[in-house]
Amino acid sequence: MTLDLLKRDGAPAGTSAPDVSLCPFHGDKSRAQHGERKTLVLTGASRGIGHATGKLFSEAGWRIITCSRQPFDGERCPWDSGTDNHVQVELSDHRALPRAVAEIKERLGGGPLHALINNAGISPKAADGRRLNSLTTPVETWMSVFHVNLLAPVLFAQGLVDELKRAAGSIVNVTSIVGSRVHPFAGTAYATSKAALACLTREMAHDYAPFGIRVNAIAPGEIKTDILSPETEAQLAPIIPLHRVGTPDEVAKVIFFLCSEAASYVTGAEVPINGGQHV
Image (tube, rainbow, N blue to C red):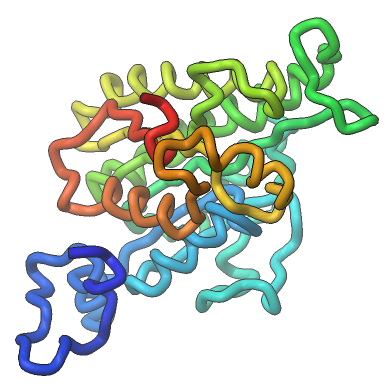
């Protein structure tokens, strides 16, 4: 049964309604309606995978606390939120992260944190739009990419560990297929940062397990977002076994699974979401 079916408010004619005890989505939604609302901290929520993830969790009744370098935009936000649930921070500046963590802790008010999703990531290109490889990437670019893509997940998890403990929560790091192969468009700094994040996920799974906190990663392949041009999509789709690129919603559903009770014995995994591109 797909999550789309599970998300229906009613059941098809002639069938019984879904058993919320068997469905993580409806179970969370039902508990939220009875005052047991879960909380998610999400970085990189303004577009693409992060935007779809925030929308899905919100539909399941979760409270969403977002972090990004952009101010809160109520017109673009599809879920019930506001400035009280948004922390503006420049993730490439590691000195700003402790302040962001402190603001999140203040908003949580000592309550539990059920999920931390480290989705924010940057992949700079050269001034002319070309891929930055290991010969052409400036040291400043290396530093900013690793601060956002690797160091920020470390510091957010460290800073929010007490809140995650209270919920026996879940951490999901968003890696990428480019962490395991050379990609024609993704830069070297981005690719190596995602490979490092995959390794970090295994280390964190080991370190956080004694506290009941699960840590996993997802590795998306080619996903249809605003930055994927029709020309690039047409070039990539034929080499994917499913002969199409994925959607942000398809990625969000896997993230939701990893943060749910359905994945209660899953930790240290990196789940590929790429239409078979890795095989």
